[in-house]
Image 1 (cartoon, rainbow, N blue to C red):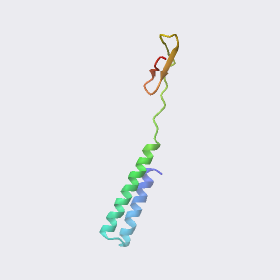
Image 2: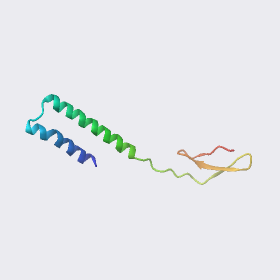
Image 3: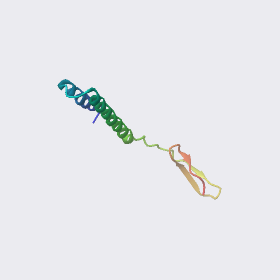
Length: 83
C-alpha cells in the first residue's frame, strides 16, 4: 500500500461521514486521531521494512604477528582483530 492509497483511504474515512452529517465534532476529532495513529503505525512499518544496501569490502588481508591473516569485515570494512 503506497502513500497515495493511504491518503485516499483517510480522505474517504473522514469525508464520507461529514457529508452524511453523522458525526459530532468530538466523534470526528476522535476518528481523526485514530486515523493519524494508524498512519504513524504504517510509517513505522514501512521504515522497518527498508534495508540498507549491502557493503562490499575489498579482499585485502592483514598478516597478524602470529603469522595468521585476517580480512576486512563489518559495515566500515575494518580489519578483524588478530587472534
